[in-house]
Length: 500
Image (cartoon, rainbow, N blue to C red; front, side, top):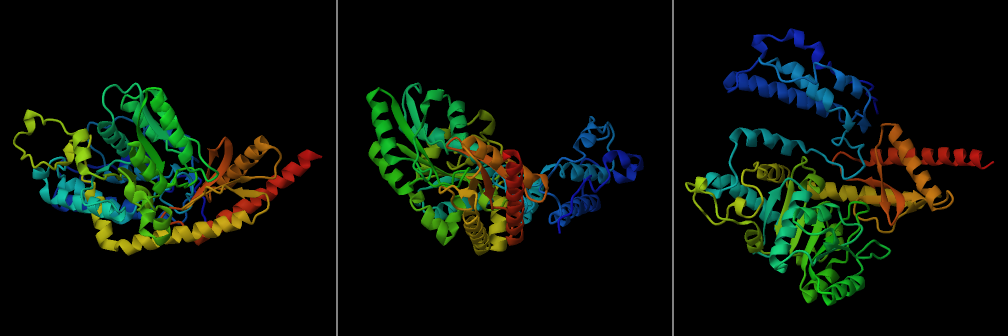
């Protein structure tokens, strides 16, 4: 049963600071019994968050102003340390505001899940504090990370020469991918370079191009078909025209699960075109890539194995905590050529093994991200992730079918994988339908029970549902449909009154 939180369920820091005693504080180098006590209290706080997941609203700002204006919360750190308990209470209260991405009611954007077994590794990784930029500094930890990267390359069907790196997410992975493409396919000035995307491509591609020094005109938008897939004929025509005008085409960015709708570009045909045109084929599979674990996903993503580079986000479709991304490159040597420089003299005591992560990524010092993947995959097994993804596909297919059968609702035919884009189609002209669609989303979100979002597809407003949270189940899908039906009835009554 849903329970609305009108205020933080725990007291704010101001209510507890008076109880602070020296006995409640911890030394800087906490060890033994004190370390056990600290970890126990943090674990208790984490368990409290987990206990509230089922009942917490999908989004809430009730009491936010009061919280942010509390001088006991927004203050500089004290000269002398305080008690841990009220500090954890403040963190717990802060976590209740905004979008609760950890619960199954969050169906907007690409929901996160914060897989607990993965989150637990952050404590261990932080205490061990391995330096994973150079192999000789943490050879075993880096071997475990290479193993999970190799597993992902196998899942995507890449050859033995493939390699990759774990990153903070799709944006940083895309930056490195386009750097590889630039290094492999361009020479000389960037002024005439051409990078081919569609209007459905994630904005991180354009941002990466900007950060890499490309002019804005380098990003060329290719038309799409009725399913929002890149038009191969239009692509070939644009490349030919650009070359005839002295420009330098070098890369195609294809979607393997576009963020707005889940749309998938024609990957096999794009692979053929990329080879014939001499272009680097980069595939953005940040959202959709791990559906490759399922039979339906493999069918939908056929051709992904022909990519020169692939971006994946385990913090999306492997349910891991945010900050866990991956870049795979067909030939690891391309990563090395794009990222490697001569090491500084201060690293001369570290053995140069020739396969350091610092040589294939922008980072030297980096967190030990490998454990975030390694432990959950070995603890739960790959089948558990496959089953969870199949469940999301089942829920999406069922909900999409019900939406298509609902009068007044149109589901975009480009919707794919676990994303559904839909809109009102019986509320007048396009602008009126846009407003009616936005009102449906507002009414659903106002309840706090379920949170969805809007997007724009080919200049029209669509409501958008993403069923990807590990904790989203059939009960949530049923409740969403009930809220949608109620919103439709409410909107129809309002429109009827104002039409008279």
